[in-house]
Length: 328
Ligand code: NAD
Ligand code: LMR
Image 1 (cartoon, rainbow, N blue to C red):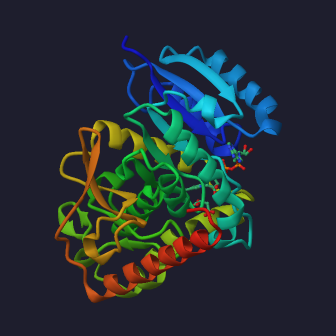
Image 2: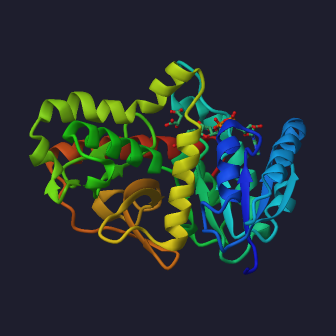
């Protein structure tokens, strides 16, 4: 077996991590031949509960779990880590919009960005799941000036998976028949799931569905408001599906995206598709050799343009708000 990859996870005693950590430890991220060392960060009052989670990890006797360390000091927990999954943040509850979380959660990501900058391994990749994910990733990135900006991503893979599932159900096909789905913009209710560039069994999805009313009044709102629907139904925000998406995003970033398809990931914009440089916005992305590239030259019709612009405007507002708060 090779040298363990050090994976930092924050919010490790929370509900997403109660699913995420067991899958990470079982080899779901890097496969059955790659041991992982887990570095788990929590706030001090949650360390006791985290000790219980570690007892359960021990009790699984996972062959790929080389070591677990826990702590409340990011400068120690992040020391030498190769991958960081920043999950820890206060989730929104019924009635809250993601904007309400900006000040509550922003400060977490200044401290963690600084700590990663100081002590992470040279090959660090940082994926932010904690909300508001895009803007938290921006805060971490801006507070880590020595880490290349392209090493900061935010999670829109859950939205991507939700969109695939809804489209497959409408088309009456298995999810494997749906390819080239794209989520554009923010991980929020303004996100834009794009069926115009998606395919179902190799055919253009929008043409195949041929139902603009469904796209506009059903598909887009269902995907964009799925997080709120789950909060309303479960009484707490999505957890197992968020853990699954976090693993899939990081796995594809490290090992490469599937041939003949692309994934959605929120990455620092290089100005592609008119999205202003610097903000962390979701795009269609291909990954290979540990790096990502934005898929170019997709057709953006007027309907799509207006929705992408609205979500990007929200991201710009969030960036302005955290600038005002002195977080970046
Ligand atoms: P949770 O409340 O169950 O767990 C969050 C954990 O983070 C808690 O244990 C808390 O103690 C910890 N935490 C708080 N501040 C911390 C800090 N400074 N350092 C380390 N840990 C800290 O929440 P959850 O359901 O696990 O959700 C976590 C986050 O993920 C929320 O912000 C939620 O909105 C977000 N989320 C994002 C997506 C997505 O698709 N991007 C999907 C679902 C949930
Ligand atoms: C989700 O999309 O499920 C999460 O971001 C939780 C939320 O607040 O919507």
